[in-house]
Amino acid sequence: MDITKQSKGMNIKSTRQSFHFSSMSFKAAIMETVLIIGATGNIGVSAVTAALRSKRNVLAVVRNQSSADKLVRYIGSSNGITFAEANVLSDSGVKGIVDQVREGKLPDFQHVFSSVGGEYTTTPLPEITTAQLRRNFNISFEANFFAYRDTIGYLLEQKNPASTWTICTGSQGELATHPVPAMTQGALFPMATAAARENESTNVRFNEIYLGFRVETDDLAVEHGVTKASEFGNVYEMVLANPEVRSSRIRVDDVDDLKKLKYQKKF
Image (cartoon, rainbow, N blue to C red):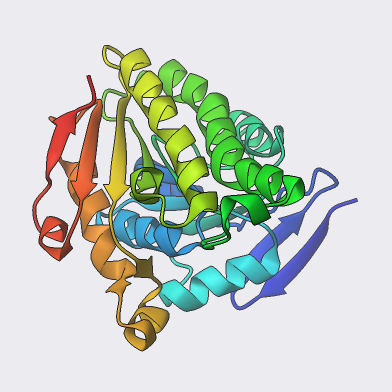
């Protein structure tokens, strides 16, 4: 039996499959929609901001109602956002979202942005437990892999020539001052290259945004003296707007790179 909840102006429909979505009017379907995996993280918030600023709708994958409410607080409004609940750490979580899109229960999407991240810790290699290692690879690598594997087929089927798939990785994969995220980020690099190769001649522009400094939600960024998510969102806006950026790594090494794309083909 379906149960409908009301929360801060959002209608969240719960089904036995545990996928929740707001009852946003489907007249907005004429606009492009960005599916965002990891929507409530620091980088995910920047992607949501960028998509909305670029006059696109957002299909935000969240863990639960609390996560949806948190994202609304960050963004300031739920306008233009459809919330879909799933466990992105599961190998069937994102697939379930795509299944609901195919069934017409969630809006179609033309773009995907993925940035699911784990612990940002300096734990030395000898002190990393097996459980910690596996947990972080599940969060930071497998979740992003599942996101790609289970959405790319849908984008290819749609044959929309403007479609994009974007992943955000971090410089820890090379710097390795923080061993846990270094290992998981390092694993994403060849995955991104493989995806870029596979889509070089398809309708989907695959790109990797390589971030070299700390980004946090705007409130915490001010407190900690780091870059605001809303500012980092400029990069994704430019990626969406520039059809020439394909199969590339976009380097964001310093704040100047928030104003003009610095990119190079991955192969």
